[in-house]
Image 1: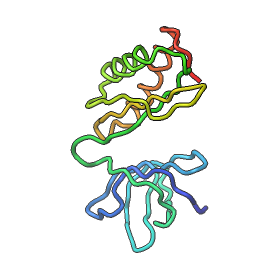
Image 2: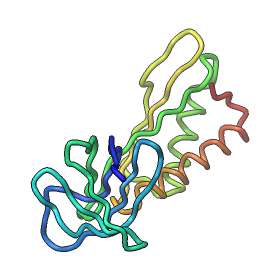
Image 3: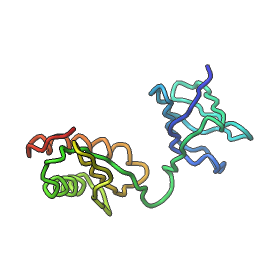
Image 4: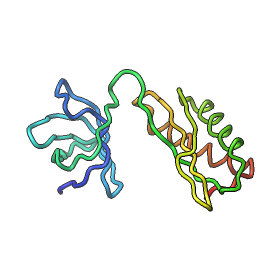
Length: 154
C-alpha cells in the first residue's frame, strides 16, 4: 500500500539519531503510529503498532513537526463570530479558556473580517508532545463557552 500526500509527521525527519516515536496523519485522515526505524535518501520507514512497515516518500511530506524537541511549539486557532458579536467578550473567552487548558504566551486578535463575520485568531504555545491533545481540548471548551455566553459562531 502506498501512502501519499502526507499531512503531518510528528518527528523531525532530518534527524537520524536513534529510534523516534512518530505519528503520521495522511490526507485521507488515516493515522499511523509507530517508531522511525530508518531514514534513507528519498524515503523513511516507520514500523507501526501492529508491526507493519510503512514506507513514505520524502516528496509526500508537506509538514514536519518535531515533537521530541525541548520547549514549546506555537499554533493558531481561528474562531469566526458574527459581525455584530461583542468582540471584547469573545477575546476574553479565548484568553480565559486558553489559560484554563494550559496554553502559554497567548495572543488574540482579528485575523479577518467581512460584512457577516469576524475571524479571531488565538496564537499560543504548548509543549510539542501535547500539542494535539491541548488544541482539541481548547476547541471543545471554546465551543462550550461561546454557547454558554450566547456568542454566535458562524
